[in-house]
Amino acid sequence: MKNFLLVAFAAFLMTSCVSDERRLERELADIDAYIESTGLDFQPTGTGLYYHIEKEGNQNRIPDSTNLVKFKHIGYLLDSTIFSSGWYVSGDIPLPALVQGFQEGLQIVGEGGRAVIVFPSNLGYGKDGASTVPEYSPLAFKVELVSYY
Image 1 (cartoon, rainbow, N blue to C red):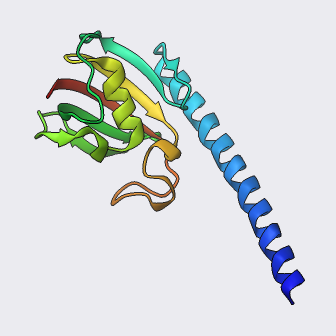
Image 2 (tube, one colour; image 1 turned 90 degrees about the vertical axis):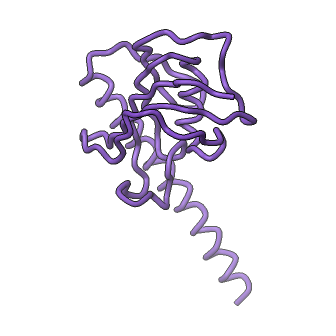
């Protein structure tokens, strides 16, 4: 019985890893198609995030994990469905309270900068999704870092 459980668990892990790999490949293909459809020049990062700078920010003023940030944003699913529209100045939000891709995007643009960022679900809401964001959804945001302290 012990051997059966070990074999079953190993099979589950292998299947899970393969399906995670395939899911990520699909997400990256969807991101590539989305980027191509925009006609914008995106740059990749090592984490899987892509960004297009619309307005250069102050690169001497970049928040870190200890900062509170104020920003504007519009969040999209890759089918262009808006799931979060806050093109107004947010309250003071701790940078670590934001999903990883959003954090990284704000750190790329610098204070006063504006960009479009696109990233896979592992940098977003992942397997859990969020209220109007389905599980495993790659996301796109238009972001502007207004200020931080």
